[in-house]
Length: 282
Length: 253
Image (tube, rainbow over all chains, first blue to last red; front, side):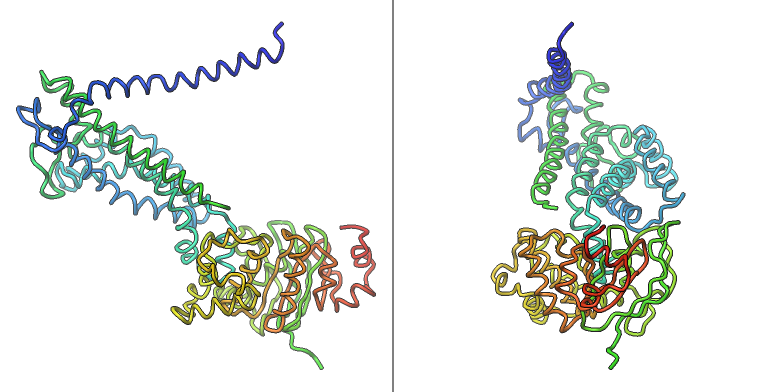
């Protein structure tokens, strides 16, 4: 028989190994991308148009396109997401309708992204006649991002201590004044963190933009929100499967740019969270 | 001569769901006096206090009947404006609970919410409020400091000043000293004696010595009933009810 202490050591060693194993694939993937893509990262690659059927030149329009889509997604999803979260957390009575909405939000978060893509195609591109455009793509990505933003915002709002609300009411502040002056300012860091994470997921998605905005090859910058754009995730798909004889360097360089973009967004979300957690004293 | 009664409570019943937390409470509170509410945990004294500014409204499933008049106005009326009521009847909580803002912003919160003042006028309200709780000299050079970095006693004073800034008539204090040490407690009690010149104060307390030291009138609650209500001197020297006597002599509670 092993003694309890030995058993404990073995068990925790197994847990430790499991934890390390999680890092391994991430590290390998990232290192391969970094190793193969780093030489491609020149100013010319980042800031010039693709040439020779995307086999040379840069990926500037795809970077710009993805940035536009992130901004567009934020514009549409932020107000709706935050307003809905405030309504559900601070105003809505706890009844069957509220629970129905909550169930809907959870399920919305679980819908596969290709379904959003087809939904966007049907509603925005065809029915509302927007055509494949930044507008239609942003709206589609916004709907996909909404559940993340609503859920994160609700958590941030709920984390504001009840005593803050009580004091505010006891001083004669109305419900709205309480939300506006007490609850929201203290929930902003949490809301921002959740929003950035949601947007970073949107930045990397291919399926929702496939039919709603993404252009196969469009070596110029968009002029208006009804234009199509190239976007990094779709461009990666195109470079690796649709165009023959693209150099590995360009493929990996494009991937590296997208990974770094998402990485920077996630790091800044973590940074905001850490910073405000330190300041929080309650 | 009959002194002015600012609060008149008649046959007040209060339910949390099916549980009756207050049973037929009748009480009259004199203006510019300190009224202490004592009793064991769960006796309903805090619930009663929270009826007076309708803070219980924040809880689901409550029911209330009877009458509470404050300055002649029925506050249980569903039509009553809660903003006006709470401006008139302010509350100090058990734990000091300043907002995570500067000293100045904490006090300016109420006046801003009620649009009472801005600019220099607001500054003078802040100053006056801090003076009235004897904090001005300590804090006048650090008005921009985060209120959460103050000592607990200073925080509780600040919370009182934050109330004073909206110029209420009645101050409800729900065990305001329970997180403070004995020295700080004495200082807050001293402050209460000063404040009663301008305000009517109701204090819920677990500490019988505190009730005896600071209050003019005392009410004893037990299991949701107001057992006895009288001048503090008579309650503590010659209680009329056996249960009051047992409680204040420490037989239970």
